[in-house]
Amino acid sequence: MTAHANLKISIAQINPIVGSFTQNSRLVLDSIADAKSQQADVVLFPELALTGYPPEDLLFRPAFLKKVEKVLHEIASQAKDITVVLGAPVERDGMLFNMACVLRDGEIIAEYAKQNLPNYRVFDEKRYFRRGQHFKHQSPVVEIAGRKIGLLICEDIWKESPIKAAKKADAEAVFVLNASPFRADKESERLSLLERRSRQYDLPIVYANLCGGQDELVFDGDSLIFDRTGQLVFQAPVFDAGVFTHALPFEKAIKPIEPRKSSKQQRIYDALVLGVKDYVHKNGFPGAILGLSGGIDSALTLAIAVDALGAENVEAVMMPFHYTADISKVDAAQQARTLGVKYHEIPIAPIFDSFMKALENAFDGQGRDVTEENIQARSRGVLLMAISNKLGKMLLATGNKSEMAVGYATLYGDMAGGFAPLKDVFKTMVYDLARYRNGQGDGEIIPNRVITRPPSAELAPDQVDEDSLPPYDVLDAILRMFIEEFQSVDEIVAQGYDAETVERVAKMVLLNEYKRRQAAPGVRISKRAFGKDRRYPITSHYRWHLR
Image (cartoon, rainbow, N blue to C red; front, side):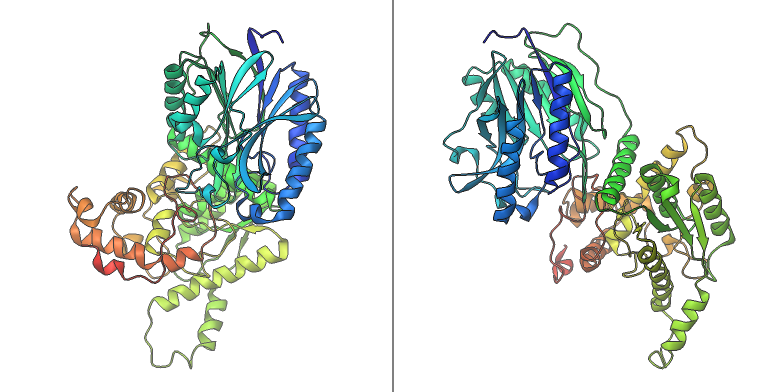
């Protein structure tokens, strides 16, 4: 076969649904047809594109794996006049592999099994897959349009040995299939790594990444092509699925491009929007509802929900009580009008009073405490869940990472909901995102007073959050070091923070694991989120041994 001077490659940056063979096979076949219409030589799909990522314990089901094999061969039978590189979990010789399957002329002509299986943070691939070294029919290099192409899968490019082996096998370029989830600093890390690898091994690299939300994870796309000298020649859109065709230069590119520039706030906001959109739609909900309190968290959540689902599919509920400030009601109503969502106001005083009447004998002789505050929150939770049940819409919880970290939330109250968009967003970032959203040129989406006034749960007279918590800039800094960086109390104190405050915060984090275990899932944007990233014991006395 005559080698093409420039390989024309289509990157299928698709948004699959885990376990939906009908939907995913249609996405694959449509992408193949799209690539063929653009006269591409090859179409490259992301890691495990056929099943979606991560399929988790579905991989333990024999019927699931048999279905994978059946659908894979059905797709292969239609892969004609083009080469297809498709990610799928494949069982070979009694072992399961994370595989890149090369389809051509109606057949599977080659297979490459992932060498390096990540087993950290949100990844636990060693639970399911065997390393590629156990696959005796390994094909690290495949011929496409007369060119020798090395195949790697995600983690393989972060280690040196796989690309080194491809180079040794005379690869002229490398294709990398990825399911690389978003976090705020991930884009710059990818660019730096691929620039270094392509230059170091004198190989062009094509990096195809998954797109879309899957439970807590969001995959941002951002597929890339680098020439052999480390120059960026193509960058696909972020948070947007599609088939993108580009010529792969085997020599130094004549016209490299500059990497996309975007703010941290923009990347995080867009990730939250896609996470909400896909969680609601992929789970079959017609829309979402939320409690709109007049505070910053629910205001930002409403803006995200409208951007994700459309105003016509979102409802907001204000549930005032004796301690709800008039300005909270005014600001909530104003935002609902601005965004054009359906808005309800349901006072909870009668519900609270009925609870207190019912509990009168049980509470006899007991003074008022936080219990009564929690009953307010739980009254609201009951109303919201009732509306959610009746309308079939997803209830969005509005709590943020700072609150979830220290337990400043009420189980079965404001924690009620099926999805929590801000679960991995610290309070200080909540304010940054609100200001970012208001700066997008379509007016004051979030009332400015909501951003500038002191935050309050409004569960007691004149209550503000700082009555119970350190200032959020201090709290978030401590939480980031303790949760995300694994720093000890002494290490944090050594950086100038008050020892008593640091120890108190650390104890609250450890004490409230039981609440987080019962919390709704939410979009992961950091390198250490609550959920899949964190597996701490609920019953633990470690909080008494912090120093």
